Image 1 (cartoon, rainbow, N blue to C red):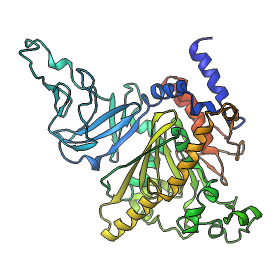
Image 2 (cartoon, rainbow, N blue to C red):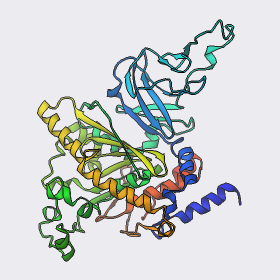
Image 3 (tube, helix red, strand yellow):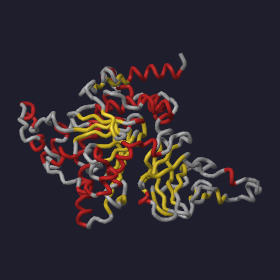
Image 4 (tube, rainbow, N blue to C red):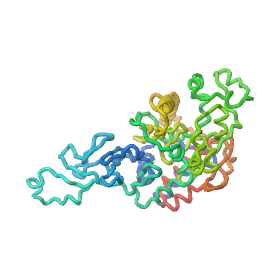
Length: 449
């Protein structure tokens, strides 16, 4: 058995889709983390920034790509390049700022200077120290292998053999980004919220689809009316004994949900628009625009769940995009990009921004509560005994009949864990290091989950 075959066999035991069980070692094993960096974050298309953040020549934004940081730079001809932020002389960062506008990048170690395109244009002491023998053309800043934009969302990949961005995203990934792009002319609100949690990045990623936890985790948010209780979701929902003792009611099990699973691990999961509007939600007016209806399509127009672009980008219904940036097996840096509609009134923009700030991010009701759970879950993966207790993803297991229609693979079912299981099943295939063709085939939805 080769090393890759042995790894594949081990991964199949770590993620057992038939039993709906996940081995906790995948959240704390340093070797697994190293594999994620090389076989996921060095291959996948990763969201870097939005074009509204770099409108002028010389504008730049520093973005993470696995363990690397890249500078996304607006060029003199208005095109965009993404440069690895490391000097080709001794490796120092050539830029210490997170964003801004420059004419060039100068390394603060020895002064090597690079233009907006990453070409080496200045070397101190060229005549005295190098005798004019250094060929500057051989030492430009490294670029990402491919850089593309979808409706203003800039993505990059280090893999020159990766499929085009549109193919990687597919209908489900594109629909995910359309949840922001089709609101109209949008732009990022200045200031990216960034904070660190002591958690494995996958806990923060799979929580995207977890509509089982709000009834317990987010009791405080329900108490102040930020999210609806089960009573408002289901006029006939009777209180259970457990609900009375906790001061919160059980979510109705027949709540309409749509789950979309797609190639490469993308997924969307959560309630339908109809279900959300039944609670008094008024966040979908933009979908009634003819342009939005045409882009979303009849199925996409009904989706009101949370989209996740594999591996680490989550889009919210409130026009935010979050990156879960892995820093170590037990540390994740969370980034929040907040969007607004340019043509909205100042009052409307202010109201939306207030809701965004108080929902997610370091000041968000919901993520403060979620972060505690993720940190505790990560901590338990290090326990001598607790790390051997498998995680369970059995809700709806084997009952998720997949309908293939209009380019989408969807499941219509009550609250379930199909999308979480799909994410881990796809994650496993990424870690096996297969070719792009094999990876696509192995992450193509079948008939059931």
